[in-house]
Length: 184
Image 1: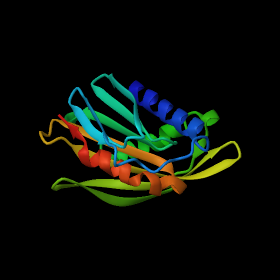
Image 2: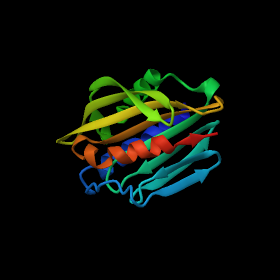
Image 3: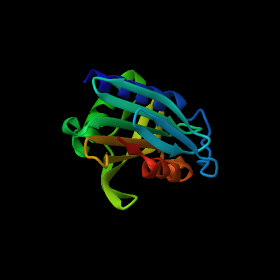
């Protein structure tokens, strides 16, 4: 579980210290970039960047950040160790509040979602919540998906997060990354 603490510490840091600082731009889908390393590949908007790709104890986590404060995490596990989507969401919510100095979030609401990836439909959840830091209260949207590799040997749990006001600028970018994601 030490890897999870590192993942969520980075997530909290990126959320807290980039929120309201960088203006969000529309995801640049006209100038896509490709990422491929050690069996993970995807395309991402040209004005986004992969800010981390770390592996620890057989769990690999990548973070893709938009030009503003939107963030997409992809955590890849061997299928036999992957957790259920709802358990992952609970872990994210519980760990987010583990450092009160970094801000707080409420539980918000969860709704079911689906995402088409090629000929597959993957299950997901949308979490709409309020992130509070000092006197700021910023509505956020986080989408979570569980994606299995074609071979069935690996699974990816993904989370995209953005201030709700910026969702329209980045949602197509999130979907493009996930629809092109391959883990083998």
